[in-house]
Amino acid sequence: MLDWFPDLSRSNSPRYIAIADVIQMDIKSGRLIPGDRLPPQRDLAKRLDIDFTTVARGYVEARKRGLVDTHVGRGTFILPQGGEEKGWGLDMPDPRRTSAIDLSMNMPPEPDDADLIARMRAGLGAVATSMIPLLRYQGFGGSVVDKEAAASWLSRRGLVPSQERIFVSPGAHPALLAILGILAKPGEPILSEAITYPGIRSVAAQLRLNLSGLPMDENGILPDAFADACERIKPKALYLNPTIQNPTTLTIPQTRREEICAVARAHHVPIVEDDAYGFIPLHGPAPLAAMAPDITWHIGGLAKCIGAGLRLAYVVAPDTKAAWPFVSAMRANNVMASPLTVALATRWVEDGTADAILRFIRHEAAARQEMAAAILPKGSFQADPLAFNIWLPLPNGWTRSTFGSHMRSQGIGVVASDAFTVEGPAPEAVRVCFGGPITREKLQGALEFMAHALEGPPEMSASFF
Figure 1 (cartoon, rainbow, N blue to C red):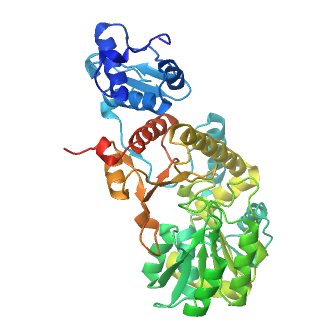
Figure 2 (figure 1 turned 30 degrees about the vertical axis):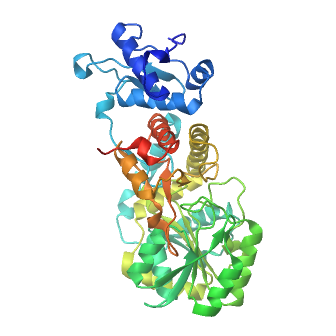
Figure 3 (figure 1 turned 45 degrees about the horizontal axis):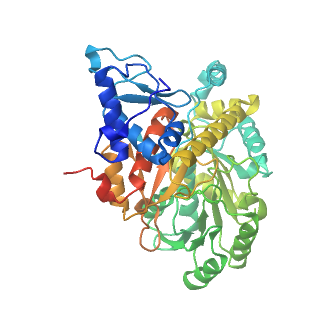
């Protein structure tokens, strides 16, 4: 019913509550019936001469009451009232039974294209035809064929290492453990960004290394601060997540990368480059390993550009001599990467399926970022146009604790800045992720709820009484 128009004077509540009140009144009177489509939020905002976010908050309130459901690309529809007694359609799930919306894990959007899924299954079927040999122990690092596939994949990032320097690892985390275990002994210092990937904090704690964070600006770590730290504490390594960094989504530009490499080389500090998101930009800066291959350990994980379930990463050692202790450490801790998943990754790289998955991920990530930009207050968050997450500084007196609690009250999971902070007090900010199994419809509802909360102080959105 696109011509429906709410008379907000029928409710004495704030305007966003009044919108939900009038929807409820019109359902009871029969003016709105199940399946009716409400006007698009922007159209209604223009007609009522009020802010779009006020209408969005009203629709969120109506959805919380079980009055409506929203479908991206289709609109907002009146739901049947009475739950199972009235019958919920397949396209209209009972909002009282919706599952939690986990926006805490930074995963790529999952493919939902039927042709792409069929192509992925075909690759899995092809691998299954040679299953028996893949159930045997293999040498660490991958076969010649696997390393050729890895070299082909890495060449997309401008890397052309010899096969002797390439290793197929069972994920980025085991590789980080092995590399940092080689470079530093317990109690010795290593460096990272002041706000960094939480996995490196866990790895450093496991190895009992002293992790120190370097100050940052919008282009990444400050070269002068890096040089000063090299003089003061003599770090054994520098860890960086330089492209679409998790969690801030910043990408270190080419000039800053060159400055960082120059400092690292001058002070003989190895660089550990976690290039998890390096394949996501269409035209990103060259890897640090392409600028300073002799001092850089490059980890090209497949978790973010293909899928975390593969548990694979392509590791490039600085030279063959550095590779020897790495292989020993990996054999001791992991024996080998799963030959089945290595074979599947190799197949997908060779037949172009990996590129097709990557194209889907880019397209879907861009669409979700556009959704966030349309719903959340303008300028309220930091994000790369292709990132799987946003970095959300909190306004209006919100703290990371109160905001996280308020989101959890609606089954929405976000991650507070404490998880990422190495140096200094944690900022009042959270990471909000858009990927994994969550649908666009559920993401839209979660973002609308966030927009509603961010409009005012936490007292206006109290979840506890």
